[in-house]
Image (cartoon, rainbow, N blue to C red; front, top):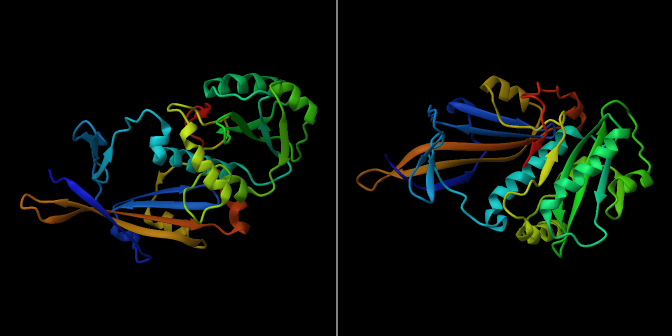
Length: 303
């Protein structure tokens, strides 16, 4: 089998959906991401091992690397995928309404053992939901500049249009240090709050968060979402469904990647093409997005 040796990516708006055999769409109400592949490969096995370090991802013919790193600092791409997912969850489930709060939970003494975060949060949430039963949450773990950890908790009421929880009650439930409570007024800003970036054009906060990636141990559950909190994911869509979905949206990004391989004579051949597009939905139409059918049994989701 021909082995891809490189990927050529070109920014272009000249993409016709009809040329691609399969299209996946992820809609988080604010952003619509589209991925399409020209040559659909049907296989029950999605990967084929090449050697100890690499494998072929059969649906697209891409060569990928096994994740054998010992720290998550070395897995920057995987971390970014997680933060992308957090951003999508916030975009879909929060709207900046009066029934939403952002709570920051800090420790009285520096806490350098992230393995304790889930246990501490469970104790906190058990006390909270005993009194406030109709809440959903998204919990995100984050280190500060020194490597000491704290928790961000985004909560919303599913029964009331207005949510008020006394500061002292929240602090008592936490019992490990100080807290901060604010309303979620700007969802766009909130959804990018956790995202790190090494780009020079990125904000100072984003660059600071990128420097802290070294503190994330492999296997840490960076976030946890309660049942009922929808996690946007890529789904198969027809060409017609995709066109209708982005009809009134503004295009933000569009690119096409050629997966290049070599034949037995060393000549380059095109094995596949992958296109990626991102659209932004008009703010006036966000609340008109229909709710999806929640799949599975509604268990909490970890990452």
